[in-house]
Image (cartoon, rainbow over all chains, first blue to last red; front, side, top):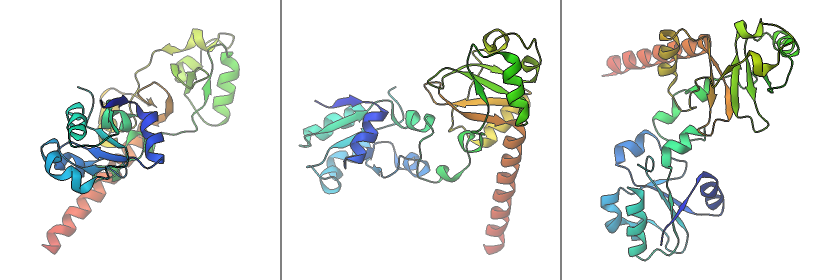
Length: 67
Length: 174
């Protein structure tokens, strides 16, 4: 079950090598994203996640907010 | 959207998936770095002065004023030990009875702005509402600095000029 985390935990996991994924559309990602994030919009996850993400490392997903 | 993405990744076999629920808005509101086209534009947090004087609730106003004036400031932010903003004192409050405490003199609960607000937006807002200065805080209310209207207007003008020059260069090149 995916675990909800806050900003401090995000920073800790990133420092330990976690992968960061923004699931918003490409235009929003291009405007601004978290350092080191890759863009995998929700609709492309099924096709691209296995090619672009390492299954042996933690993955953190985010969008704009919790709404 | 991100909870669905996290569940989808699990269904694809990823074992350790986390959802940063508060997302990009939370990250930017904390004044943390970002990448992308917008990231290069100046924001409230970039222009805010970090050396603004601060004091605690129980500090004597006369001492606070003396300290602020010595460094040329006409504003002081009242914070607690976590640097959470509790009040603001501008020139008018700083000029009141020196034997009062900061708590008695301050404007409690002042409006604050997040570090990621574009500087042009901040400059326009401060002019429209005649604000000489505005505290910039993280979403938790922790002080980042104080944005002075003169700084916001100057930076917004500089940005406008740079974009105009860039646009003109594009037209010549095109």
